[in-house]
Image 1 (tube, helix red, strand yellow):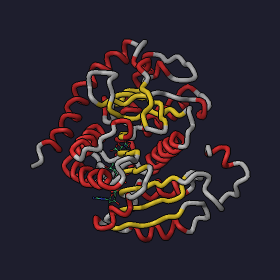
Image 2 (cartoon, protein in one colour):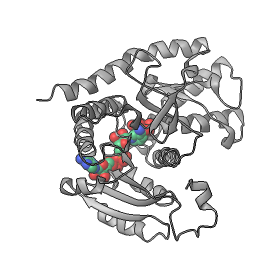
Image 3 (cartoon, rainbow, N blue to C red):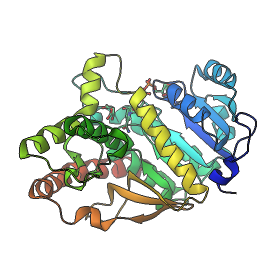
Length: 335
Ligand code: NAD
Ligand code: LMR
């Protein structure tokens, strides 16, 4: 039954209204913990599997006392990873190191590339049919890494592999609503391209509801959205990067994925996916989500752009291309 229908009359806390299984890899971390809490609150989830290389037992014990429907299970270390993934519908991967002030996301490549590769190998072996949400940075490279690993394992489904860029949309919505004095709930700004610096391109001209911006406002908002991650890294002054807003954004993307899996025909999110909208093999844009993952891209997202957006789109392509190729080469070069 569809979630909304099932929701009517089901006692809150007694039964899940749908029974999807979600796994979080890196669940003990700064993103992993609040994300686990938010997913524990979802009525669509029956089982929440938490995996990390350390400290996940306590997180699971703690969360398991919340009187919400899902059962929380903990899995520690590589020997338990396979069991964590069996039968899972959605796998979320926030495992890896975060930035410190002065670093770019690409500076995380050397450590996080290996982490993502190893985890996605296990996903390929244990739940190849799951939606895979990649949060670990640099997303512009870790998603191509995941795709190559899945290809090598013979289980790549481009419709089910997503780089999570929801935080860029969340930030864009917040900053635009503040600047233009709009009701937050109404504002939706598509953000396309990738997830690092100038590759993050908010399409302010396509903001809903329709708003006009001065050239100055466009420049100021675009730069703020592109530097949102760095703003948090600097404020945290060495203690990591965005975790709470990221958990909020990732939970929204998980909830959207579960609604799509559950048959809701009206689910749209921006994500970094395999794409033919540009000449780049991966590109973030608005996608329609369905039971089988990406149901459709929106080519119209890239038509009718302003001159500012056209220029920014051309300017981001070389950097995004380099990051994608770096990810692909990382897997292909391995013996
Ligand atoms: P964190 O250091 O607080 O947590 C990372 C967790 O990953 C830790 O618990 C660690 O034990 C775990 N981990 C490390 N290696 C692992 C492995 N091999 N298997 C399983 N778990 C492993 O970091 P964080 O703040 O949670 O950030 C995690 C990642 O998310 C970073 O790479 C960060 O850059 C990225 N991030 C992405 C976005 C986005 O918008 N996509 C936003 C914020 C952060
Ligand atoms: C973000 O956008 O907050 C994340 O990608 C983390 C970072 O390093 O900025």
